[in-house]
Image 1 (cartoon, rainbow, N blue to C red):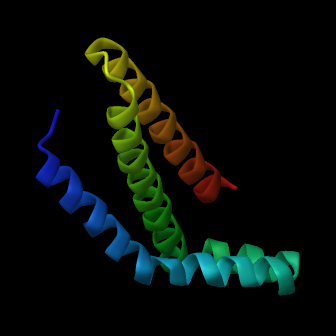
Image 2 (cartoon, rainbow, N blue to C red):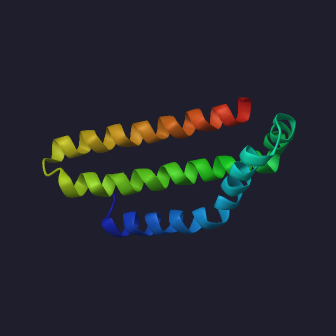
Length: 107
C-alpha cells in the first residue's frame, strides 16, 4: 500500500481538481432541466464537453475510492480482509468510471 502522506496529498489534489471540473457537471445538470433533446445531444457531442465530463467522472470516482479506502483502513483491522475490501472497492469504482465514460462517449 502507499504511504499515508501520498494518500492524503492525492485526496487534496483530487478535491482541488474537482472545483473547476464541476463547471461541466453544473452545466450538464442545468441542461438536463432546461434544454431539449437536440440541444442536449449537441452539447454532449462537443469534444471539449466530453473531455470535461470524462475528466470529472475520472476524478470524482478516484476521489471517492480514496475516501472509502481510508474508511476501510480505519474500520477493518484484519490485513487480509482489509486488502480484499479495498480491492473490491477500487474495482467497483474503476468499473463505474469506465462504464460511465463509455456511456458518455457512445450515448
